[in-house]
Image 1: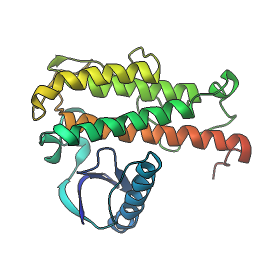
Image 2: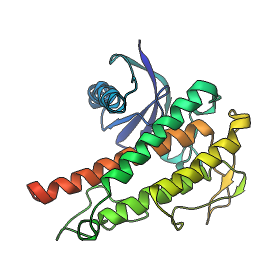
Image 3: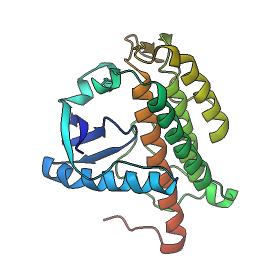
Image 4: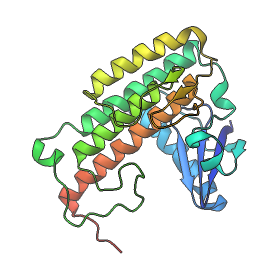
Amino acid sequence: MSEPFSLARYTGFTLAWADGWPGLVAGAGTDSGLAERIPLALAEHRAWLNAHGVAGPAGDAWHIGESISNAETAAPGGEFCFAADRLPLRGAELSRAMEQARFAMEDLAAAAELPDLLLDWLPADLEVEHADPWAPDPRTIRGILRHALQLEVYYRDGLRDGPAAGIFEAVGTPRSEFELTVAAVARAAHDTARTYSPIRPGRHEPDEWTLRKVMRRLISHHRAHTAEILQRRTWVLLGVPESP
């Protein structure tokens, strides 16, 4: 079976999102690099889900379903929706997406269950290769966790019209934030094809959000920062990589 992917093309970089597997994403600077990376991402996602006792994508075949050029300017704040994002997410498919969102939350929580000494460790001379424009300085593990949860608030608050949360909200624990996400999804479940128009702090134009978009962004973001935390933990054992 060939999995459809929606592509977001940025200047010098492309992200490919699996339409049928919320949170499965691959990126590369060239089309040839992307063609190499997507089968790896499919295999990694399958291994992740298998480790949680459920089936993942079968095989490594894929094709392009949609491609958005100049994605950084395609919508206000870059918050575009793919056509696949606008499809209803209901029934067994919604249950599967929420189950995988829970897996991602549990992995994040487990990775960050550490003593304060490790949570607050910031390696000397650490540089950020691709700086987050909202937080350009290196983060501690505690800071990585807080950022992941702040974005969870941002994503789930996309399921509303009008004023909505930004990316610097106060947050609780991974489990308490996830329960709030579960409640937000339950409220949205009566009309899973609906498109929402949240307006973020400092902006005058609304974004475009759907339940599918929330799921793909939330799962991928938690998984990425779980990997970042685990990478940081390996530095304790293997040493911090030297800057080139």
